[in-house]
Image 1 (cartoon, helix red, strand yellow):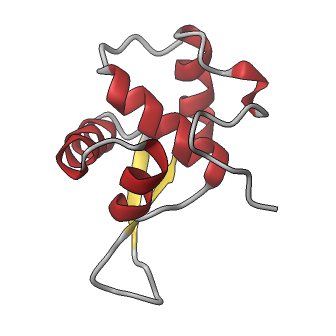
Image 2 (image 1 turned 135 degrees about the vertical axis):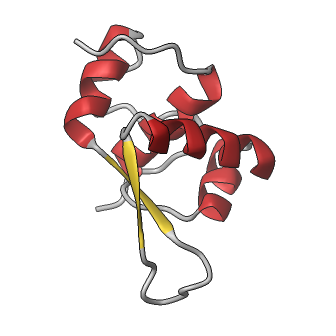
Length: 97
């Protein structure tokens, strides 16, 4: 099991990426209602722990997308009681079908 000390904002961003798939920082900020600076900080922490990765956004190369490492994310979110069977979207998120 992963043992990290992540801020709540990083956990919110991680759950959003796990549930909704790849998103740009702007999309994450809009959906979570977190400030852009908070999202940037959370993404830096998640990248540092390899809980997510940055991928090119082929429709707009100026805004990269971030993709969760789903296996590690599930373990971590379960540890913090935020897994919600991974079927419950966090506030502000809608499932993409």
